[in-house]
Length: 179
Image (cartoon, rainbow, N blue to C red; front, side, top):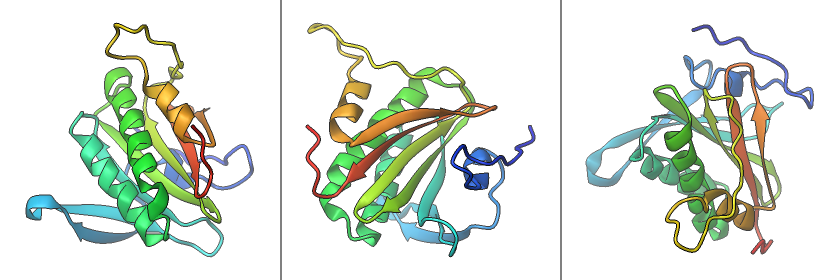
């Protein structure tokens, strides 16, 4: 499959996001130790013309939520935003769980982008064009609360459609209580 870059609706070049599930291009890789001496590669992209970003491609599997949480904690700690790391871990867990349950393909891409002072966007990229729908789960249902949780923890969330799939994201802001 070929991944063709495209300009984002706001005019910025989102080449890495559009190529998220394809080969990596031009990003510097940093390796961090993970629990039980397993190594994890985290891609950190910082360019003078772009916002700081961390990203990681993971298998589309439930076990990937752990790696996604590690990425979130690593990025938020590096940016001095430890205070929102717990909420960030919950948000990325729910977004990855939705992708595992409803998307297609073998991999997902998790990105964290510093969008302003004290503000970060957590996004999960997948190959499904089906947009997630927030629903009200019944009291006896064990599923169906993920997007309600994302909505409660973030200052905003949404879905950006792409030719090849979608990006589901939520933004967190330090010092803002969303609940």
